[in-house]
Length: 372
Image 1 (cartoon, rainbow, N blue to C red):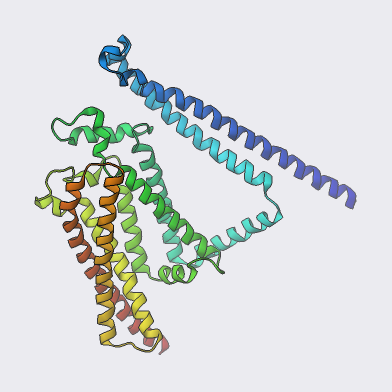
Image 2 (cartoon, rainbow, N blue to C red):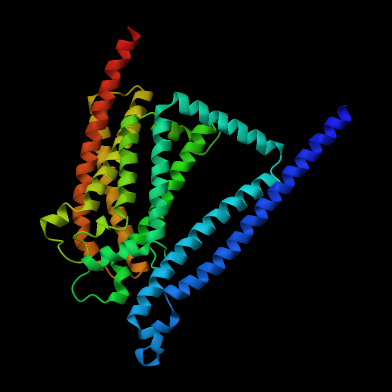
C-alpha cells in the first residue's frame, strides 16, 4: 500500500511538473509573439519613412487620412502587444517558479502567506500600507504606458499636451513638454520598490536591512498617512493630464499661479512627512538617554526644519543636474523655480515638525491614563 501511495504521489508531482512546463512554454511563446506584434505596430504607428525629408518621402507618407488610420490601428496594436506581454510575463514567471521551486520554497510561500494574513488581521497600519501600495502600483503602470510616445496610451497625454503647448511650439517636439514624465516614472519606481520592501520586512521579521527603522516608522500612523498621501499625489500629478505642467513650461514663473502650482503643494507634503519622522527620531534619542527637556524638544524642531531645508537644496541641485544630463533644456526654469520650491519645503517642514510635536505630546498624555 505504501508503495502504491508513493507511486501515486510521484505521478501526481510529475503531472504537475509537466503542467508547469507547458505554462512556462506558453508564456515564452506569448512573449515572442508579443515582441513581433509590437515591432510591426510600432513601425505602423511611427513609420521611418515619415522621418525622411519631405522630398524623399513616398506619396503614401504624405496622405493625412492614411496617417490618422495608421495612428489609430498602431495605437490599438501596441496596446494589444503590451497586454500580451503582460500575460506572457505572468505565465512565464508562474510556470518558471513552480517548475524549479523546491520544498524550501513551498515552506517559504506558506509561512509568508500566514504572516500576511496575521498582519492583515492585527496591524491596521500594514493594511493601510498595502492598500495604498496597490493603488500606487496601478497609477505607476498607467503612467508607464502613457508617458513614452511609443506607449500604448500616449494618445491620452498627447491631447492635453497639444492643448497646452506654447504658441508656435513644433508638433514633432510635443512630447518634450512633458519634462518630468520619464523622470517621474523613475521616481515612482523607486518609491514602489521601497514600499514593497517595507511590506517584505514587516512580513519577514529577523535580520532584515533597516528593520528597526521600518518598524519605528510604521508605528507612526500620522506620518504614514502623510507619506502615503504624498506618494499617491505624486503619481496622480504625472498622469496624462500633466498637472505638473500647469504654469511651468517656461511661462508664468512670476505669477501667483506659479507659487501655488501642483508640485509646490507636493513639496510641502513631502517635507512635512520627512520633518515629522526626523523630529520623532531625534526626540526619541533624547528620551533614550534621559535628556528629555523643553530645550531638547526645541532643538529637535530646529534639526527637523534645518535638515529639510538642506535636503531641499540638494534636491534642487539634483533636478538641475538631471535637466543638464537629459538635455531637457529647462535650466532657466529650474533656477527661477527653485526658490519657490524651497519656500514650500520650509512651510512643510514647519507644519510637519509642529504636527509631530502635537502627536508626541498626545502620546505622553495617553500613557499615564493607560497606566492608571
